[in-house]
Amino acid sequence: MSEAFRGEFYQKVDSKARVSVPAAFRRIIEAGDPSYSDTTRARFVIVYGGNQAYLECYTVTGMRKIEGQIAKMQAGSSARKYLERNMLTRSLVAELDDDGRIVLSQKLRDKIALDIEGGTEAAFAGALDKFQVWNKADYDAHAAEEDDFDLPEGADMSSLLPFDQED
Image (tube, rainbow, N blue to C red; front, side, top):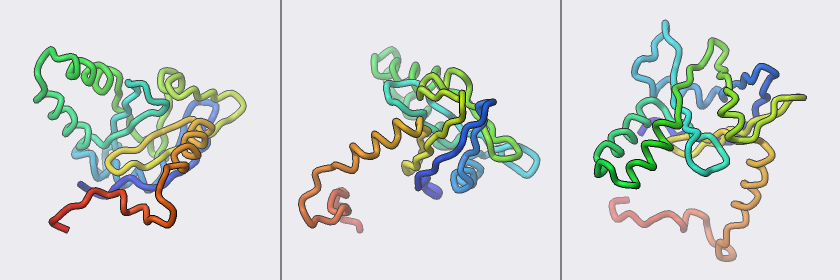
């Protein structure tokens, strides 16, 4: 895997539904798009299917791996149909413009309940091999809930990592 998507960023969404993808994420998107060059624009995949309250974004290379995993599943199985519908049918390829922005279509804004009237912000959250785009208010509420994880007093959060005998 290449560099991980990490960090959280708040980005203003303008009245034309354009939002700047964080610069750190753009470098990973570029590295994960085999067709990207100095003469083309970097692309990535935005998944708006599923029941989560955010958009899930993958590099082109990352999505190809997922597509390969889905293709190996039993044809016609309910799990494969669900993944095809929600990760493939309900996704789109986005392209960064010359300023590193994308346009959030009405369908994408509806998914995350993002109202662009009067100005608003989107939250970008790194999640290893993907990143999420949230309505800022929903992200803040969700992040506060996750911060309440029941970790034993004084325990280091790395104690949650699975033990790997090779390390």
